[in-house]
Amino acid sequence: MKYTAAAVLAFSLALSCGGSRESTDGEDQAVQAGPVMEITGEIGVELGDSNFVFGVIEGVDFTSAGDIAVLDSQKKRVSIYSPSGDFLGSFGGSGEGPGELLNPTGIACLPSGGFAVTDPRGREVEIFGDDHVYIETISDFSERAPFVVTGTLNGFAGEQGGFNRDAGTISANLVSWDLSTHETTLLMSTESSFSPEDLAARFMQPQAGIVAHGNILFYAPPGTVEYAVYSFDLDTSEEALLTYPDYSPVRKSQIEIDAEIQAYEDRMQAMASSGRGRMFAGADYDPPREYYAISSIGIDASGTLWVRRGWESQPVFDLFPAGETVPASTVTVETAEDLSDFTFVITPRGIAAYEEDPEYYPRVLLLQVLQ
Image 1: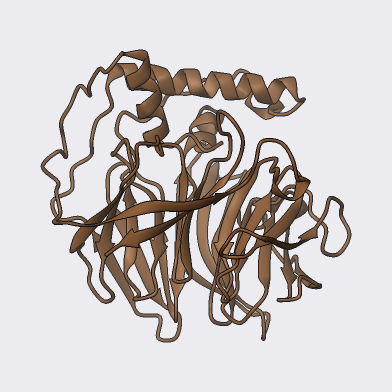
Image 2: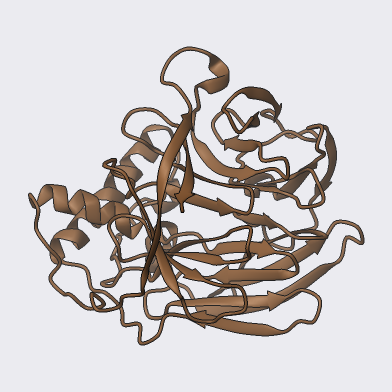
């Protein structure tokens, strides 16, 4: 489960019986309200047909035909569903052979057809065709495979991490892989100091947001100080910065910080009970005092970038029209259901949301924008 700021906020509000934030920084950071989304259906059941009973949903994407691809990291497979929710087939499976998965963390439906499934534990990205048949394994990673990938016109892109033991630094590298030439392009690299005390904080921070539309790649690294999305033209190498005018970080209340620490301890206990997480033994978690500015990003059919605000308890998306560097409007979700801990997937072919560690059972929500 990714413990987003929104999830912790919802948990802490429940603990405080409706308490509020200590600071209202950022409450005036408003953009013109736009349309809303509504839930139109869902995929997944608690009991019954095994093709609809998920273990742990780790990623969702839409194919060029509008079908829904669901990555289940517990079952080590990808299941495909029609837009109406009918089961169409699956591929993958547990193992170390070609097309098999150890610990998959991300899936991308490729614009040219097929799928890329990243498996950091195996240090591989597995490539499958539209017919779900294994094609090849990309394994020439200097450190590890990216945790999150997105499809590009010629292949895929993702954030690849690195660790320099001698220098005591870690790096985050935005890289694109061309599947036709098998060439890689480094688009952006950042390096920061690292110590064992930082281990828990790194573990709890959200994944970077990475999406592509045409030849444009968008990248939102996690951060609390700046609201920043970088765009890269994969043809011309032209770069741009998308941001929120006059953004100022939003502080958490002490109740929210305490709830986040408790969430970390609960997660470590759950991992220890299954024999995992030994590297975190004794690591204390000191949460950031401000919310992450951005929770996730997506792109729709018009090329509009959707940026989910990290400081809102329920999903609020800032919309950046194609070519613009500041948001023009927002989108919210019209529902009584608590979606604070849902990961949203915004694509040109459809919109979905899912929880990795739900209270009841895993499912995928399907949504649409009301005009």
